[in-house]
Length: 347
Image 1 (cartoon, helix red, strand yellow):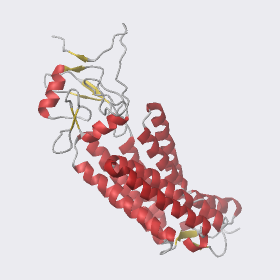
Image 2 (tube, helix red, strand yellow):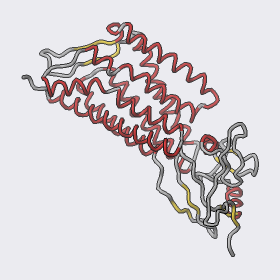
Image 3 (cartoon, one colour):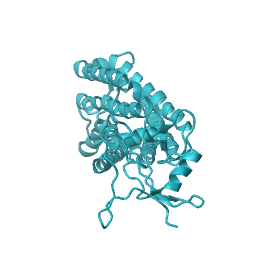
Image 4 (tube, helix red, strand yellow):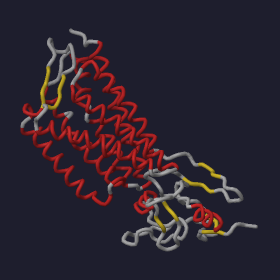
C-alpha cells in the first residue's frame, strides 16, 4: 500500500485541525447564544461551524487514504465541500450587515442569498463545468486537488464572496473600529483580523498552489483565535472613578444583557458630563452617539443597537431604547423582593 506524501499528510492534518477548531467554536458560541438569548451570536456560531464543515471533503479524503490507501470519489469530494461555502457567506454576511450597514441590510442580504442560490445550482447542475479536479497518480499518493474554474459561474460568485469578505467584513470592521473607543473598538478589530485572515486564505486557496496550501490551512487556524477573542465575553472588571461608586459590567460586542445591580445618580451625572457610554465606558463623540429617548443617558450607537436587540431597556431608567420593539426591563430581586434600580449613594 502506497504511503501519503509528507506534503499531503501536512495538508490533510492541518485541514482536519481547521475543521475541528471552527466546528468546536461554532457549537460553543451557539450554545452560549441559546443560554443568553442573543440572536446575532447564534448566527455567528452557525457561520463558524459551516466554515469548518466546508473542509469536510478534504478531511474525508485524507482519512480514506490513511485507512484504505485510496482517495474518495471526486463527486463525493465536491459535494462535501462546495455546497457549504455559500452557507458560510450568507450567515457571515448577515452579521456584517447587522453591525456595519443596518440601514441597507435587507437589500444586501437579498443580493447575497441570490448569489448563493445561483452558486448552489451551478454546482449541482454542472459540477464538472464549475469545478476542476486533479486526481493523484497513483491513487492514494496525494490528496485530490479541487478548485473552482476561473470564469465559471461558481468561480465568479466565489470571487465576489471573497472580495466582499475582505473589503466589507474585514476592512469595513477595521474602519468602524477606528471610529469607536473602549472595548467595542477592540472587539471590532479582532473580528476584522479574523475575517481578513480567513478571506485572504480562501483567495490564496483558490489559486491551488499545493506548496502553500499547508501554510494557508495553518494560518486559517489563527483566524479561529481572533474570532474567539472578538466574540467572547470579557472577564468582569472593576473600573474606579475618582470619588465614584464602583460598577460591574460584562463587556461584549453581541451580549449586553446584564447591567450593574446599582447605578448611582452620581455615576449617571458623571457619564453625561464626560460623554462616556454607559455600557462600554468608551468616549462618545461625533455622530456615533445615541441618547435614551426617556432620560437622555448617553450610549454609543452600536451599544444602543445591541442593547435594543437584547433587552431593549435603558440601563438607567428601564425605558425602551426602541419604542417599536417589546421591552424587557431589568429586574433584580432583593431578599425582600423589592426591585433595585437607581440608588442614591449612602453617605
